[in-house]
Image (cartoon, rainbow, N blue to C red):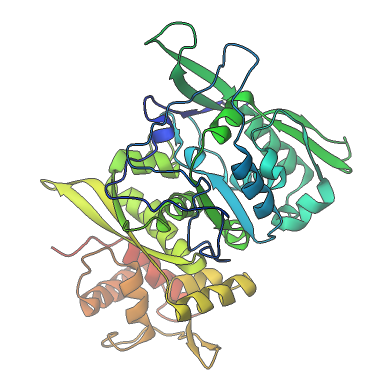
Length: 419
């Protein structure tokens, strides 16, 4: 049986909603003005009176009785309007900032994608105590149709067994806090042969999280469905929530906090070198390839140890956004190679070098591969090339062939930073 995963929320800051330095521009109705694009480059604030600076984030709902706070009408209408836009998804800021409790398994990539589709289908009724319905045929045409029946069932069960833990003020005793726990989905119904309609309802706890969310991320549906790593999708959600905020282009996360936000397995990737190489670097490369913004990072050290990571982002230029759109419109084949700078484009014709140079790589395609894969600050490129040749010969690896670039990129990612 799958172990329950618990998403933890702390008071008084529910879901670790950030208290930003600087002001956030308040927007007037109508919501979702054209500051958002198909690539998810901007984030819209759904509430005209939303101000994240010092905003109170306690859940204001009566969990003890039958009442629950409902979403305000303008926000419900904004979500309903957004649901009609086929390539846009919305994500609650409170939900995006959830962190997985230590020792619990994070959501799989399939479960994350299915979750976004269910949220989109619910539209303005996210916080309502209703049963939502969606034709299974529509669901399978969205990018999840490749899953087997067993995988679809397991993914739904994953959403039913992932728990949300919320800390909220007691409705009965002043000053006392109560911990409320519930699943993401508390009801799912489908035909045994996997046809017809899918029915589901969000749990009472999640409906309250939705109702209390005053800021939302706008995501590109095509980008969400195209991600190949759950680390990439989590990073995309995290930055999409922040990329549209005025005067905010960077944020520093404690290393353990960033690991938890990206859903790194408990007890694994604990060291900075492993986390950077296996989670952060690949996630940043994929987000930069598929999102409407570009992200980079700076490790922050205390002594010799990396204790925090400063994430920096910027909206892509027009030409970069055009390239991203072309990537999303094109086939998946070759995307990983392009992401690792393994393919050069000359008049849109891919030219792949098949033999590693015997001398300097500084002016070859391999230099771009090295710059993209080496940890920062990077070592001298030709010194890395010399080490690669020695390693390949000692290991009996060929220095030519269709996999030479992939092999060189993997070698570079395993190198240590200069100095």
